[in-house]
Amino acid sequence: MKNWIKYGLAGLTAGLAVTMTAQAQNDGTGAILDRFAADYLEDPTFEASTEFGVVVDGDWWTITMDADAGSYAVTHGEPESPTFYYTAEADALAQVDRGEMAALTAMGKAFSSDYAPMDIELMDGADFDPAILSLTFHFWTRGTPEIINWREHATREVHGGNVGIIYYQPGFRSGFGHVMPGQHVNADPRSRTNPFPTLLVFTGNRAIARIDGVDHEVGNGQVLMIPANVSHEILNPFDEPAEFLLFMFGDGA
Image 1 (cartoon, rainbow, N blue to C red):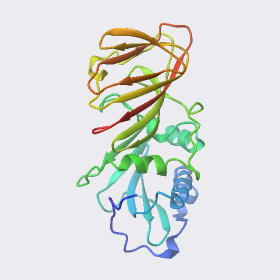
Image 2: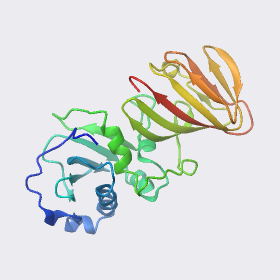
Image 3: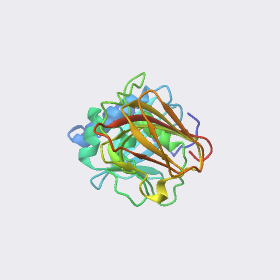
């Protein structure tokens, strides 16, 4: 990971390795955050120190990851320096902790004004770096290697279909979708085009791909390539859910 974000950690020492505040030890949220921070400390992608916040049902926590000391701290309260932070409902955080839903799925939105049970925000004075998205995957996904049981992960309805997010980084997005009978993905005209290519790999049952207004039946074993700025909708008039893997790539993805 590039050294793209680093905040003042001068007060940290090696004695902070694998620590929590006394309050965190007795708090369900603190225990969950400690599990994720301890796992991220061992993640091969963890190469740069970082500090960020987590707000769970309005309650602030700070995660401090020190790459130089090989330590982390989970403390109750707001970060001292402007940085990014995650907001989460306690139930959604518990789902992520149990491996039932990916954090990026919990953050999925069709439009910025939409509701999501988890989100990424910026403190006043902080700047957004797209690399936060890849950090989000690695921090909130435990285990080495990081194995995603995508068919077993919960989805959320986004863009009119049931969608799960797998991995994001600048120039690449991936996810999976279940289009249930009667669902219409991208029914809203604002959602129908992307300024980058989209690849759909159908892994189960049939759907109708409406490309530039023309309907095509697609299904299991077929790959649909949608160039940048081409209108696309996915409809399911059939009796069984259609299933696909989603890849978006290129400038702007």
